[in-house]
Image (cartoon, rainbow, N blue to C red; front, side, top):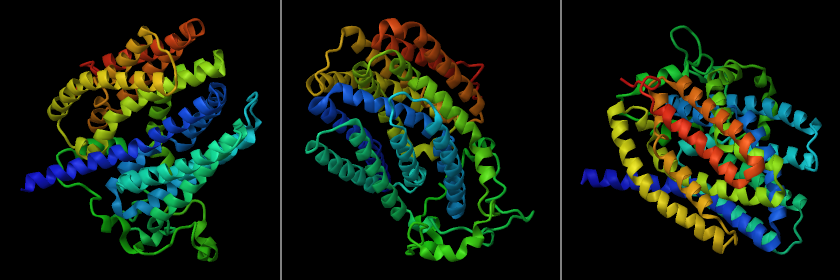
Length: 459
């Protein structure tokens, strides 16, 4: 009976995670179909050109904090406000600097004022992304995404769409997300003070003396009890208060608490501790997106639109694997490698079957909904790009767990270098086919690196 309850609970977590993880992809698919079929591929290609710049800016601003914050919230559930505010302040500084650089860069025909506004709006709701995942707010996040995007699509149908108007729709949607996510997490938005922290024996606050996150993963294996599992311990004394900074005018009377930096909110520690995650994010961007950026340089907007849609579907197929893993990520950090290897074999077998159905689904959607005609070679490369991911993706959290993060970063850098260099050689002549080949080459290097026994010795 107890086992059945446990299985049901895990099943609900997986379904909830899948629901939340695929809310955004499904929304993007809906919007892209509407734009491509109702308006033109050219318009979607111009949107993708802006989106690529946005993605690069967000990679810098977020500083690799998504996974770092998830781990930090789990490790210090009573200090979530301190950690959250350190991230918010740090990202705000980076956002201001990035937007200033963006505004003065020569970006051709791109609309820089709207890009700056979009960066600010997107960063605003991503402040809460890790906290939403930690608190497992899968259902409300997914419902909000669906409602906001449905409203956006309804408005688009009745208007003569231009690239500026399309960007404004996305900016407005992101602004709505800011207020909704801030409301969901309002109990954590009370400005922390040094007196709110528990002091250790050395007299240093936990928020001001963060230990290295990388070195602490290994010691956590074997713990059976999940930290931060109680919702009451997460919210603490802030439960029931609308104390978010977006909702309290009373904060204006407490500006003296905003001294930079405060003992409670250690922004410098946030940058320092999350820096390896930032390197990993940059390397991952090159490994997974360099081909798309290169295609945007050498090919027209219509080709860019078509390739971005195909690459997005491949990444959604990858997302299916990670979405099934996310609810149990904290457990994976505690497993011995024999258990991880057994789980990996199961995922590889599952991936071999799923890749067939997912490739078929991509072919069906692109042909009947987008009216794209794909060659047999493109279809084969889509299948291989999906399949090979299942052979190594579990090695990434395993590397974190066994204190091998720098090996993970090294391999991801090698993948990015291959994707970038190979793409420069073949994309100008082969176009989309060259992009898929360079992406596959990067994945092969990643698979070989993550399965290299000397580089990844887990014994």
